Length: 78
Length: 78
Image 1 (cartoon, rainbow over the protein chains, first blue to last red):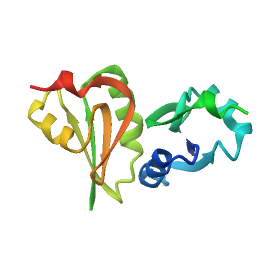
Image 2 (image 1 turned 90 degrees about the vertical axis):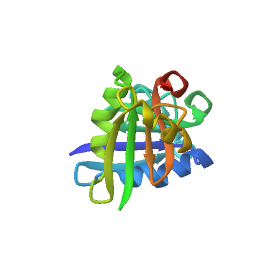
Image 3 (image 1 turned 30 degrees about the vertical axis):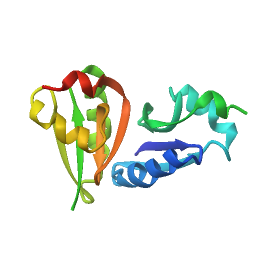
Image 4 (image 1 turned 45 degrees about the vertical axis):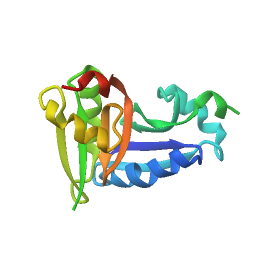
């Protein structure tokens, strides 16, 4: 199954998007994972490799979609 | 049922997002509508009222989420 990874950093913009967007994804089509980069800084590199430049972002089948703007990925690097 | 309205303007960024994001929405939870504002300029006002400032954007249950950046809504006003 394709993966949908929702990267966020706990910011208010992030949490609003998580609640709405991540929950709206069809879990019959995508395996949804939510990653808090503030708590899992070791995954920032993986997010950047997928093209994530800011959070919140949704990586759907390997393609990055930036949703509104919460924080720059550069500010989350460990 | 809640509505998910995906507003776009036919731009390449818009179409990529439409293909991935609009199709990933759980149609058991949301009634999905896709609106091409270039072809339906009369709906620009409705999009702006929902908080859409650029396209592509997804309005989920009345809340606007901007997905990457294709075009400014001001450039789509009739």
